[in-house]
Image (cartoon, rainbow over all chains, first blue to last red):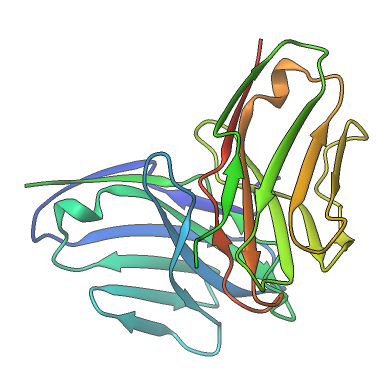
Length: 114
Length: 113
């Protein structure tokens, strides 16, 4: 059972464009939703995270939009740059914010063309 | 200081052999986690240590997998009687405490022939 579904699998964007990656979850007990960025040969690195008490969180060019009723959340990368080319994973954690038993999506390979 | 380090970076073994994968967490981090990342998939939780004890090992796929953290710092993931399906990247992460950001190491790529 895949508890966090991520789309698209891959995404190609031109430099300066907006990259949008979507995730949907099934378990309503999830209450912590981070996004991770992974470069080839490296481990994932936390990019930005949100809790369901807010509908949007912005950090620089990265924004998470959260829709609790639809059980969906998305990552928006504004003014995408070639250096943003990486694999992005959404994740979710159970109620209580234990933040250790993360459930990850399958990932989205983002390519930003110069 | 340095980030999370994992050794070896690559390990090739034969079916049926025993392997050990090592993780050196960030100094001072009490929480340590192991994940497995198969090709084209996101990381899957295996086990979580708080200090020396395994607080949650519910992600270990079967009893061929075992992990230790005897002094509350370095951890070793041990896999007995390896199978081809064990081939994956094994990621280690550490955090200052369970509710803090997890910092991941670069992983060990295990290939079972």
